[in-house]
Length: 141
Image (tube, rainbow, N blue to C red; front, side):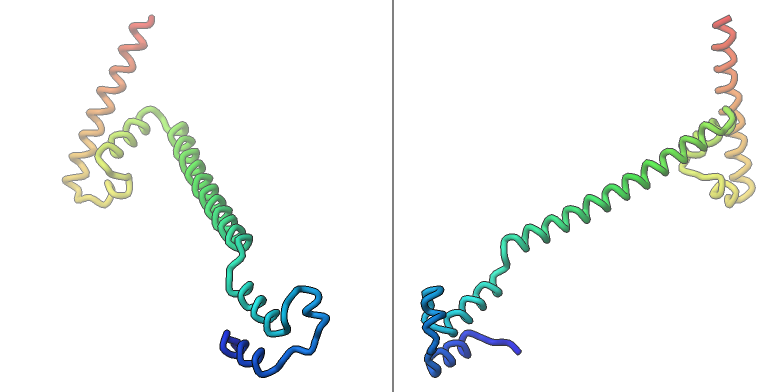
């Protein structure tokens, strides 16, 4: 049941408060005044409640951000470990496909002619890169 200000005023006017003890304690003229004060207090959100809600939202956002960044770190770590586990030829192939915006799965799904063309380009890239590495090693000796 909802009590509105009109009901409080009607009760206060029609029913004089006989309790002098309430009046003496808080300076109020009666129960109606106390009820009115309580209604006003309950209808106004407390600053503490707003702060608590804001803090809860901030905490929730912080936890979500930490979870997201943790997932991103794990994804980067997994990709790094995968790259470290590859041979130089596999890394060159991966880098070439990535530069073309392709994955191994997408390459496999291409029509045979297109796939063969890309595979030939990858072979050329491997030859050039591995030759460059061999030349650098010979230059050191």
